[in-house]
Amino acid sequence: MSRPEHIGPPELFYNETEAAKYTNNTRIIDIQMSMSSRAIELLNLPEDQPSFILDVGCGSGLSGEAITEEGHYWIGMDISPSMLDIAVEREVEGDVVLADIGEGVPFRAGSFDGVVSISVLQWLCNADKASHNPFKRLRSFFTMLYSSMRQGGRAVFQLYPESPKQMELITEQATRCGFTGGVVVDYPNSTKAKKIFLCLFAGVPVTGVKMPQALGAEGEDTVQFSNERQSGKKRKRGEVSKKEWIHNKKQRRRVQGKEVTADSKYTGRKRKPKF
Amino acid sequence: MKLLTHNMMKSHCKGVVNGFPLKLSSTQVELKEVEFNADFITRMLERLEWGALVDAAGQLGVADGLPEMAPSSGKEEEDEEDVLRKIHHVLLEVEITEGELECPETGRKFPIKNGIPDMRLNEDE
Image 1 (cartoon, chains in turn orange, yellow):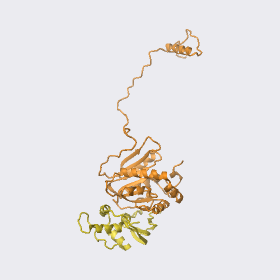
Image 2: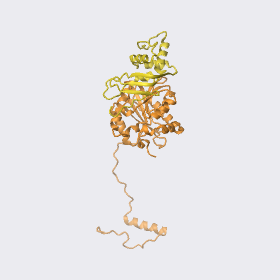
Image 3: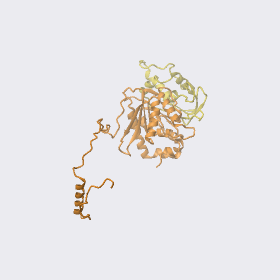
Image 4: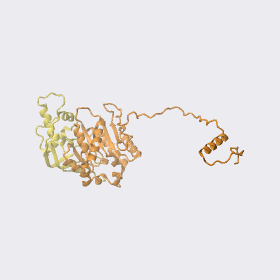
């Protein structure tokens, strides 16, 4: 199955039919809700206090509903009119804005306590039009996103990177725009359950810069590594000479019942160098 | 689109220095009931641009009862909850379903349809 972002730009991929299918598919709903809850958890927002969140690529509001469920308020941005129409139809609590995140984030400085984004960033890495430059678009996005966040706020992106190179491209642009942070990989050893979250900090968070713990990877944080020089000693093979070895081998084969040439004074004799 | 969103949005047209606030004009407005959360309103008070809020609310005719100056948090007032409820109403219960936003510097218009503002830029912007 090919990756959706290779089929076409998101505003065309998520057309009316696809948007309806997507929003009504129980499997997709389950996965999106669980990833959204996890992303909100990774935001590490202050407890028992309603925060103001930006949902990047909110689509039909599945992730937005998870945010509302946690008691927070949100604004969503998406490029697909069909997906947003469904969000409005479903009467989600957050306002939704039709916009292309590659053009930036149209909000005032320090607007949001946190940012979540579910299954979106990989779409930003493709040039869907001749005028698109993915580097520039990523930079515009991260620059304006950074300024729209309160200092100390976190942005958590769940994404499906096409390759480590694409992941590098994204993190490099984010770093250039002032973000710090890292990648959290839940269930790294399972192809099915593995989920990748890019956690970015806009300035130093109040709760400190410790990266959140990944799921399903207990005890595997460290790799056994020592700085010792590997000893260059070769293992000595058994003290058996070549001639002796040949005789042993022939005997073994006789015992196995295989055809073995008769022993003579030439068996295992040392050959001249030119041989 | 709610007035809270309008208060947080700014224009991202190329070359714009201060794209806030976007001029608001509406052709259809609806009132929707939203649960009151005093905590949230208090927290958002310091983030709002009060002048722009009063202007926009005035545009839509819902500014009655809104104080001219932003209430300062921490001050014990008799009718504090009433003020917060009024602010809550203006911020979250007034829905602009059809209208237009205009960039204050370039004059570029962004339509609002079905409550959704269309902020997509053209290729040359």
